[in-house]
Amino acid sequence: MDGYATHEVLNQPGALEGTNAYAGDQALVEAARVFGADWAGDTLHRAGSLVGSAHVQHLARQANRHLPELRTHDRFGHRVDVVEFHPAYHELMGLIYGCGTHSFAWTHDQHSAHVARGMLSYLWNQGENGVCCPMGMTFASIPALRHDTALLAEWGTLINSTVYDPRAAYAKDKAGVTVGMAMTEKQGGSDLRATITTARPASARRGSGAPYLITGHKWFFSVPMSDLFLTLAQTETGLSCFLATGWLPDGSRNRLKLQRLKDKCGNKSNASSEVEFHDLQAVLLGDEGSGIRTIIEMAHATRLDFAIGSSGLMRQALSQAVHHTSNRRAFQRSLVDLPLMRNVVADLAVESEAMMWMSMRLAYALDRSEADRGEALLSRICTPVAKYWACKRAPGFVAEALECHGGNGFIADHLMERLYREAPLNGIWEGTGNVICLDVLRAMQREPESVGVFLDEVRAARGGDARLDAYAEKLADCLVDPAGLEPMARRISEMMAAALQGSLLVRYAHPAVTDAFCATRLGGDWGWAYGTMPQGLDTQAIVDRARVA
Image 1 (cartoon, rainbow, N blue to C red):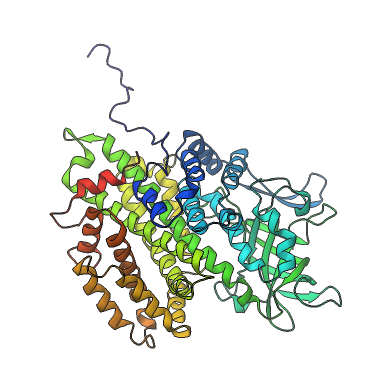
Image 2: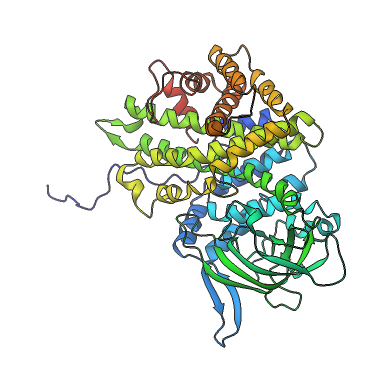
């Protein structure tokens, strides 16, 4: 034993870094081709290289270790209400905005621009989720601003700029701006009509773009350092939507007071706060009393981005699990070569790929929704389906991927720990599970033809797999009369997700992935946990496909 070093490191896989999260993801590259977004390959390759780099991983660790700090007053006692971030956070913001992740769909007048932007979001949610929140809200602000062409013209260029300008200054003095939201209140939560914040006209002028003064509180102000933000308040006419700047033209803070930052379970690098408005200066966006209608398109865009974001987070968890189990040995073999472990990893890979295809199909529908009524209806009914299912599955998925690492995955300086804390978040934002499933039913009832459009999409794979065909007809029977389905809304939503995913996999995915999905998710032989797929599936091909090259 002479010379034995007790601290010698053996049988540790090391970090997964120096990869390209786009080029090395076979399924994602195939989806770009299928949905016509491969023209954006250079941008996607650049983002994939950044996300897979050791540098971005280092920045993410730093941004989550050195958390945002609220400074309400300066040293002389003046109220300043600023949030200070670590330089790593600002660098990450510069990188994600530099890729155009927030604006690609609005600045590229080409087919499938939403698919390309969705893929950028999918990639960056594998890098650092804390910067994806301001990115997603900035992206989703454009549909809301389309309710006022003058406001869109005034702010659109700055919103779509790929320059991230972290200065605390009036928005029009900056090279690019971020957009936040301050919607929910203590007493209301998802029930936005329970808003008690009030707005009164600041002049005799009326209509969209008119100045108002807002007084009240907001329980969640997402990204309080945003240059612009949307908020809701009650006017004499009813609940209305407003656009405000964080700072005023004279360089002073707008009339808001940040009460505290939320100490969140995850999304630590990003700041969320409670805020009080005291005659906050804002302008009306849309018509008075039409606040919900004004922001609904923004909510639709953010819900799609949460489906994409949860899918991206799951892909990162899968990549980590494949890497660890492929490079960690036990019982004289790599972990992933043990049949039971390979079953677990392959099961995760099937789940992840199915989520990706569903998310990108709906980005494709969004691209075509203005010109194609059927695509608009598919987007309307299936975006909440995808948001519900991806967000609902993410926590359990990440927990299983974490378990693949053993105790190492549960340590706070491991990426898996951060993903685990992050995983539940998207299921809460923009509507919890019940709210989202009720929205699926609402789409069926208000636009009944959307059910037929959905079933046509599923049946586009008819004849490709008998298991899918049988499942689709069973689901069709359930959807004959949407009335009275509320107690079953979750079950209906998950069945719709499985049918859509199965159809997409049958049409576009590797046969091994398709076979495994249809054998398990469509009422086949599958247990309650991951790793319970039946014998006879090509789990090796599934794992090899999921490995980031």
